[in-house]
Amino acid sequence: MASLETPKQEVHIKIDDSIPSTKEINTDLDDAKPIVLMSVLSSLHAGYFRISLSLCSQALLWKIMIAPDSSSMSHMHSNLPSMAFHLLWYLALATQASLCFLYALKCYFFFDMVKEEFSHFIGVNYLYAPSISWLILLQSAPKLEPQSVLYQALFSVFAIPVLTLDTKLYGQWFTTEKRFLSMMANPASQVSVIANLVAARGAAEMGWRECALCLFSLGMVHYLVIFVTLYQRLPGGNNFPTKLRPVFFLFFAAPAMASLSWSSISGTFDNLAKMLFFLSLFIFMSLVCRPNLFKKSMKRFNVAWWAYSFPITFLALVSVQYAQEVKDQVASGLMLVFSSISVLIFLGVMILTAANSNRLLRPDPVFGSGTGPKDQLKSSPFNATL
Picture 1: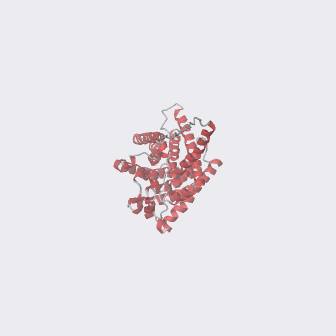
Picture 2 (picture 1 turned 120 degrees about the horizontal axis):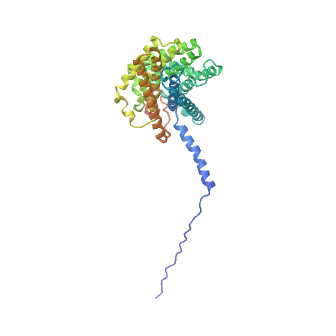
């Protein structure tokens, strides 16, 4: 009987114990850096300028409070307020310059996304925010006089985009059927009004009274039209995302800024400035008494929370000027309350932003390209982070 032999099989195992070189690791990291940058640029939008706007307005508040003719900090003889103001101003300058640089890169690498933002019924309003921040930063500059040539040149550069956007935005509200104000109006539309009022204050500080009156009238007329449109709850007001409800604070930011602008134009905090301050105060109380309005928007932090900061700071600014004019205990109490609230909210939102920075840098879908607010909202979940 023949014997059967089973064939032997050899198994070869190759062990690769090589360690990647430092050069290869650095190459992988270098390749990852452009990917991270592109991710940041794609998630960036004009709504992020709320951060620099809050910083700049806070710097202006501190400048007014520590002014030699101000009695708000007359009891403090240390250099601490002055140091805090200078630190805050330079922080605002660095933040604003960084955001502008990043947004310029986005315009270069993601121009289509910028075009979508420019045509979006909410996003287009925040294209005013960079100019507003620069104008407020200029007005709060520690060692730059309004009568200087540099101040006037910078003001002209920063005000030109405001007038350009005015021509585009306000013009389409009464000439383009699919973009009538009754369809496009939303609380963010008041950003355009604030831009004109901030520019009016800057022009008044330089002594350009006619230019200041022109900008003030342009802003106030459109504020009244926007306010009435939103007050009547026409179709545009029903298409506002829930997570953007902090933007409702712009309702009292506009009259507060109008009060500041008019006091600079008239040279005194007269009755019209006081009336605008009282209107701002009333709207603020109306919103504060309805916390359920903001309940859903407070579930998860997003950059829209910065919309709580700068409107409160505008109200604090006008309360400081009101206290300087009236000089009684009630006015001083209002100044102390709103200034304290402004600083606390600013610090709180800044801490939350630092703690949630990774979430803020996540890429979001681009704006929708629909022709109306309803189409854009359906195709643009990006609204939740505006």
